[in-house]
Length: 273
Image 1: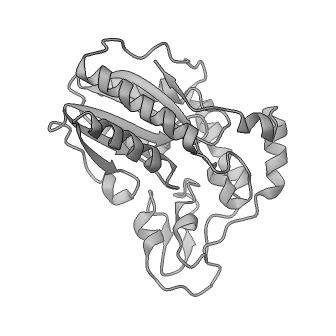
Image 2: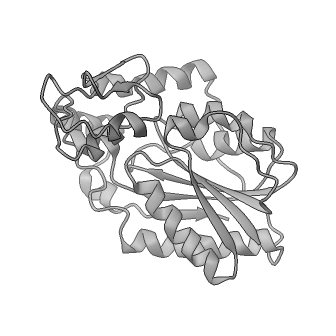
């Protein structure tokens, strides 16, 4: 079975889970191509699914949904009734209705969604001082990813004819979900910048940026294009890209979500059967 595994991974969390799933599927004799759709250049134009028997999509959750750039790119895919599995990574806070909305997008493109799963991972804003799911994904999450790969194989091969269970739907209108998405910039008030500091000009930040928002030459980021993924900050080999200190908002976030650090750390990755 020839499988395509598309993944968006600004901070490496989704890529890590992708590799676990790929390796486990290959143990069953599958051929798995990992396709990184994070850089802007990777999403130029369409994507030909015809050479794959089935597809897997992995993405992080940004404010209750997968990143807008992925949502806007998915209409380039043509499912042609192929089976598709979903997995999401998130930093421990609200994840739904991401399973449902992602499933709906894929079904609209002609895919048959057969399974979905979610994996805990360190929050993007830990880069700015938060402490959400530090050290995740860990071995417990890896074990769930291996189990999920087994389920994917069974569903794709027809050994298990079940489809994905009932996903939590949403009654929230798109306008409200868009507004929630904008809340990220109430916390990230300073988009990545070198603030005039010198660097080696490796241009990794510019080449990696999912939206082409950062200019390596000037070290400045276009706020209207930045999606607050912070991949550029994490990957900067010299650590010269700076954002605002998010530490003060951490306790406020916990209070607003009515959860403690202990309760968050007790969360587990899980599979929707």
